[in-house]
Image (tube, rainbow, N blue to C red):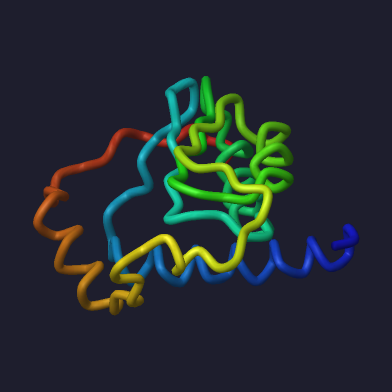
Amino acid sequence: MDERDFQAVCEREFAEIERRRGLYLGGRARLGIKDRVAIVIDDGIATGATTRAALRAIRMRQPKKLILAVPVGPTDTIEAMREEADEVLCLGIYEVFGAIGEFYDDFRQITDEEVITILARFTGPGPAAPEDAST
């Protein structure tokens, strides 16, 4: 993937992140991560374009340390992620890699409503930590 294609993916992913953030978190403030440890968790990585975009978005918010945690991914993609994150944790790294769903018994997509319900169970309505002024 060349840089132009990657930037197009980043723009689409940033827009989707903001759409989901508004839908999932409503009016709650964004958590402050500046000078804190940030952990990005994904269900697996294939090409890495989406994960790279997410890591770069988090990096702009200046965490003290940026960790990527994934269960599975192809060798070359996991190695490339080591340039984006301070630490990469991956349980299964494979030279020959098909689709992420092959590693799951149930890989169905959950609905926005399911996400909202889950977040409501574990997120209180109280104020979030203040974010740095640059974001």
